[in-house]
Length: 309
Image 1: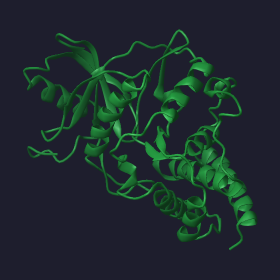
Image 2: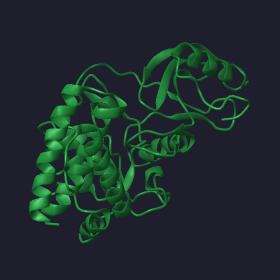
Image 3: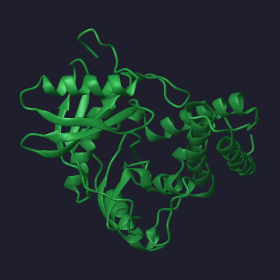
């Protein structure tokens, strides 16, 4: 970031005050009643009103450069740009998403302003979720590769981060997984010539806004990849957020993406080790970490049996 402020402060009150000042400094963005709304590991979200627009949310990063045990040298500015682009893409293919109002990069604090979508605590209809997921996987992916590709193919990305995150789980969790090296895992992933589609890769309740059981919007595209739809459904399964009816909405069992056993295990491990790192390092929780390490060990055992070193 610029203007002598290298990053948004982690302190919530200071962060909101900075966002309010930056919004107020722009004649076309006269915000009112800006207040804290929610936060995640990378971004904080404020809610307010914008003259001539109505209710809005403002999303801005805690820090410009993201360094943690899951992600290294990740530019939050790129993630904000991607969020704006993929929200617009989602709307273009009939997926509910908030309208982008303003993307501001290069000033004292980067931020993205979108319309606020009314939502409640109701559970979204599983069939509708399946229809939305099928719509996403049926559309041609955008030309620009998502940020987390880092200029590499999906197979290269998965193999490298599997190896890295498994190493973190072994170091912090005191376990021995013995996964194959990245080159062997990449070769297995490349052996399955699947479709390449845009994948949300965080398709869970926290990122699906619902109102009276209907989906109002799908948000937070930071983890997006271009790859095999089976990778997405494996992630949903490992999140344990696959409600009854999701498959029916997708088009039934015949349409549900499936990968060969070894590729399926690698897809599942990609999510399992990511969650392991979260519970061991980013948002430490001893109980959840123990459960997740047991799941990783189960998947790793089967992978090593099917794919001996």
